[in-house]
Image (tube, rainbow, N blue to C red):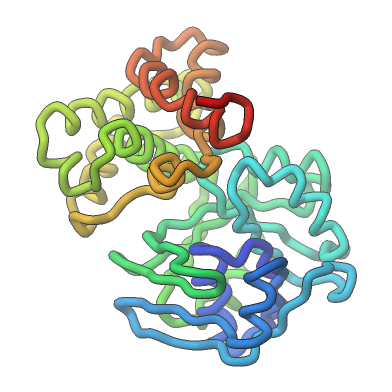
Length: 312
């Protein structure tokens, strides 16, 4: 399959690398230092599931150079989705499927507004990886999972065909749930409290799960998201927080969420698309969100500074 990777960071670099390793025609769309390093040194991935290098990846800076792809995996940060949708439009032909892999629940809607809903699948991934340097990725923890499906309808031939193509890759599992919206919210319930509490506490997951106060804080933030999901008729079961804690308890003690790393590093983060979305949805649907609101308020000054809107 012809697969374009837009956003060659910790997520796009890993999944794109695995798919290229499996023999797919992978096109990496990159700029700046990442583009230069990919051209000169290739893509390097360090993983508990096996290190590998893609020595001569196909890499471009301008999507108009490539033509339509069968699949576009969009792996930029959530705050860049709308801009990226316009940028990647030349990669989208009549049969192209765009799969967003951002944290949060709003990327499919933002993509559909630009590209048309017929080109957009719901998508997410489960992976703990970091970008050590441009085109140098380190994966830690469990086997990465790529999850996608049709929005608002059952999965049909398109999803089955894409799944058959992608599951040939090693080092990743491909899942196509019947209800992708529930899957998006289930990850949202897991990753948003983990990143928010981690950023406030400035501590890795091993500390968050062992200290009773932060463990309770994680649980309370999850319960607020579950209540909002119910208001929006999302089919999340009552034990979604329990399943989230099963994942948290299985993670390496030193693991951190991407939003947490960005906040601590003074970089623009996905705060508005994670905790901020919980607060906004709560206000719109009449669901109280005291824990997520407190996390959002505590992190907002740092986010405003990182985005150049506040100096201190």
